[in-house]
Length: 403
Image 1 (cartoon, rainbow, N blue to C red):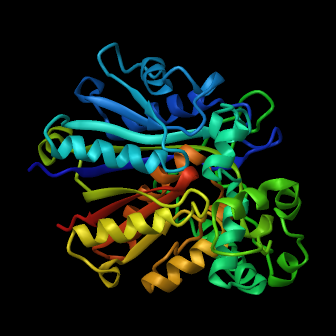
Image 2 (cartoon, rainbow, N blue to C red; image 1 turned 30 degrees about the horizontal axis):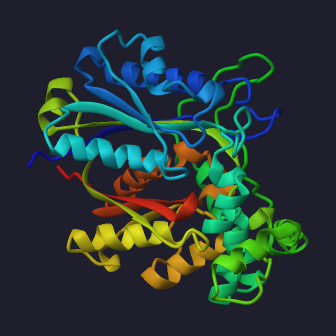
């Protein structure tokens, strides 16, 4: 079977998902076009050699609708012959786009392709598609479709994690991200976004809070207690009999911060890399898509990691870098405990709590970050994974290419 390789990776900074955020005046389509142009320019690509573009996005409505992968390819000047498709596996959309593209390369359907994700949460908010999973009371009750924050607090309750443990993790990821940002760790892949409209432009992840302390996080109120009292706890407990009450422990400091961003990876065969004059950076060994109880929901990313590692005949001890979407602190503590993934191997430069969660873009960012960190430390294997709504999870396993 043909091997699939990561040839390059680019991303935008992550901007605050707010009208005052640094990327608010850039639509998701704008961000994709900007990155597609950058990917071509920095690699001297002949766009006619690109076989397909697959982009993940979680809210495919309004200006993020209409298959923006194809629209962006046309606007980026890639000509009429480059196809494009947009997929939705909620927050795991970007990592799934990478996994699906790599599988098609291995299967011989593609030689050179682009995969990634995009989300402008400040312009197309969470739940903007008004899908029945969020809005139909009968469906919500039938499957226990609760808010992700309620699921996070349910998981914390089930695992017996304390508020202090969650806050300690929240401080750790912020300090990691602040240090990495100060040291220029992300410089190779980061493509600055110039000014537009009222936005002054952005050249860094603007959500990082270097001054975070255990004391400052300890002063924050629970973020989802009122939501639970409004009926969400009753829905969760009605659909899941594991506990009688839910302890609300997560705050905004131990929850993923909403962000605007985009990321793209160039993926291809060894032959296509040679023709393009690009040295392969990592081999994509495989991916796994899993599902768990939709009320517990957020454990699916971990189950996908366990599955993709086992399929490759590896163990967690073989993995040098885990890039795991920080879908709330409780799930990160669970992941670390179960897989023996200490702070040096899991999210070594911080995660989505500190740098922002741009839904469809997050998974692509994690795969790219995983490759870069393997290169920095001379590691061999890395895994990137995301948990999504309704109990979905996707993981991608990569192996660094050595000379």
